[in-house]
View 1 (cartoon, rainbow, N blue to C red):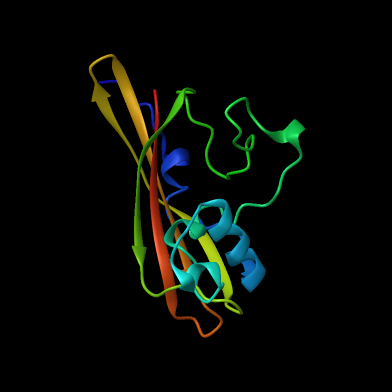
View 2 (cartoon, rainbow, N blue to C red; view 1 turned 90 degrees about the vertical axis):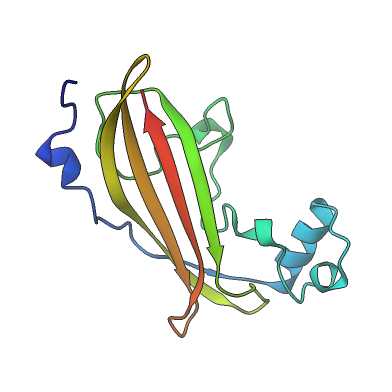
Length: 152
């Protein structure tokens, strides 16, 4: 197999984006709970956020002109320019360390934790693994999301 990744690509391993801070408001939890048809009182009253509340919590709102046809933002992630351009989702793992509650001040830091290549049935594949670590204002972990993307 031809080696597509260079030392320059591998140098991105361990690089972190700037921290993003958010404050969770009860009204945000309530709106999310209603929109996602939650039935538990703790969610509808905004005392605790439903599990899926975490997805895109650290995404910044974008004008429609900045969105791709699939609704995702264009080029918002930092990372190396890869020689393979078709990117697919390769999986997401989430570890919840504690519930999210109103008043939480959370900080998220996204880091590229690995970049590697494999031979696929139809050609080479490049895997990029990113980890989003979210902590509260005391530095305690709240959740960790590991996302893999596959370029082919």
